Amino acid sequence: MDGMSRRTVLSFLPLTLIGAARAGTQDSIAVYKDPGCGCCTTWVELLRREGFAVTVTEGRDIGAARHKFTVPAALRSCHTGIVNDRYVVEGHVPPADISRMLKEKSAVLGLAVPGMPIGSPGMEVKGMAAQAYNVIAFTSDGKTSVFASH
Image 1: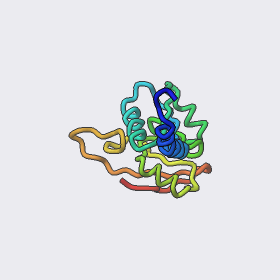
Image 2 (image 1 turned 180 degrees about the horizontal axis):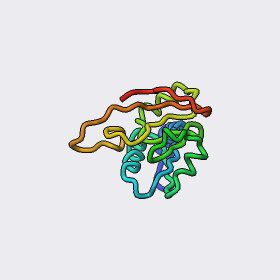
Image 3 (image 1 turned 90 degrees about the horizontal axis):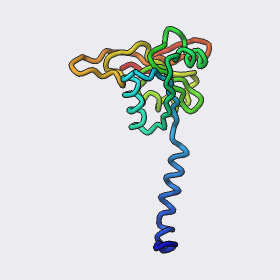
Image 4 (image 1 turned 90 degrees about the vertical axis):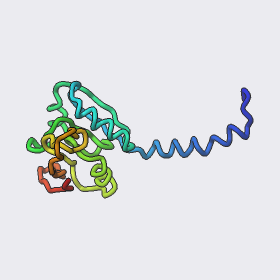
């Protein structure tokens, strides 16, 4: 075994299995964003720190993704994410709200933070007070409701 005893190899097995089990349960988010958008990049980094597996597709025509995933026009923002191939997340939605939606298995198409409110995740600006904003839940037939207020 090239210098490793059988006992050493077997001692790593539980850690390997635990890591594989955790990797299998990690929630994934496919993010569509403009390549020059810094606030979107900051939001993606925050998602990764919060434990989401994030892939990023950059392009100038994010509108095509929004149309494909039926994000209502009034709720559109600067980036679109698809969570676990099931839910749509539009704009600067806090990771805790995404986690809550997943935990509750919410019967919605997705969540959105319309516009780009100062103080929302990725939109923190030094010297500027955070704005109050709502996270809006939306369904495939266009119904909306307030999911969370920040």
